[in-house]
Image 1 (tube, rainbow, N blue to C red):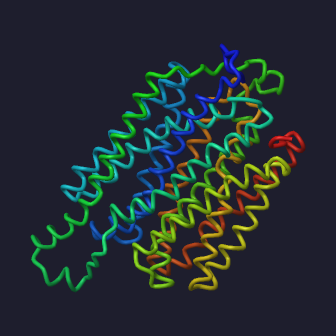
Image 2 (tube, rainbow, N blue to C red; image 1 turned 90 degrees about the vertical axis):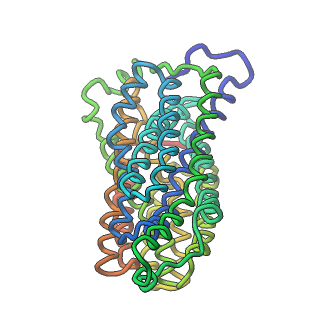
Image 3 (cartoon, helix red, strand yellow; image 1 turned 120 degrees about the vertical axis):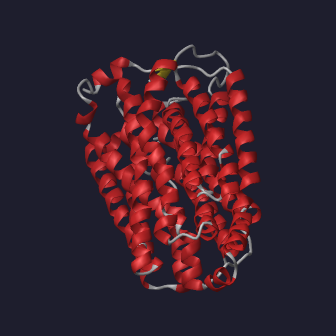
Length: 426
């Protein structure tokens, strides 16, 4: 692929790269408020672990439902139009949090999250492949990891924002609920729920502002080289692209693992180390800061280590660390989960980049399929929540452990098929 109408300026890609990287920050922030919403709405709406896991399900089902429509919109109207549509949908979902909190209607919260995710689907379907072609194809994986690093920065800031502006110190016990009248209980819980209103109104306004800036800014069009797919033999059905299909499966399991690790992090700290929600949010922020640092380090290491090899090494580390978290308990388990966040850092962009490599004119469709696989984040947390309800939150972390075996398989298989062609910047 190549960019049409390339400028003669020193770096014609700099401004587009910066603006698209802002989108990575926005969806990273939205994603990583979910671990805050899970314990908060669990309390405000009086949910079980299984019921609270549907916060992730509503969110990630949006990706599955909207990925193909997003790809079709991009094909017909271009990436810029698709991005603006996505931002408008994102803002609409954020504003819906206000009536959801006012009525304390869990279903309305889930609808708002579904709408937000639908908007993010447009952003991710566009931004991930767009970044890979804003420069030399040999450094596409590094470039995507750099943009995703700002996604990691947002991920580390979101729990802090949730700690100060959403979570409260209020503890609502079953005994307290029983001692109050239904009207008093509803008033207490509604007041708890309403702490999400202002933060999400602010998010909606920021997103609308970004949409306005992008609407006023010229972004170069992406021109896919149809010859690329012919030269690599990619002229048949996209479902014949074995590496893409393996990548879709790996991304499905990876996103499921990532969401499981982060979404139940606060609950894990409370159950295994008796750490309060607000204090646990601070730990989560630190863990996601490690996630961001892992992205920057991974981008650097890919100058010397092939991306698929680094992916395999990081997968092995996560399998070992999750085994520690499940079997040891206490603070060592917490440190192990923080380590998992660090080693998850490069996985999404690396799997994405490896999956769509060499697709040529099929890149947009391939990108949509990889984005669809994000639905793993809707399924595995529900499984984990059910295991937690019938066993323990610590035992439930076996779910992401199994997922990382699948990621490891893809890293090894990608190596055997791609070999030295996946250079990551050599």
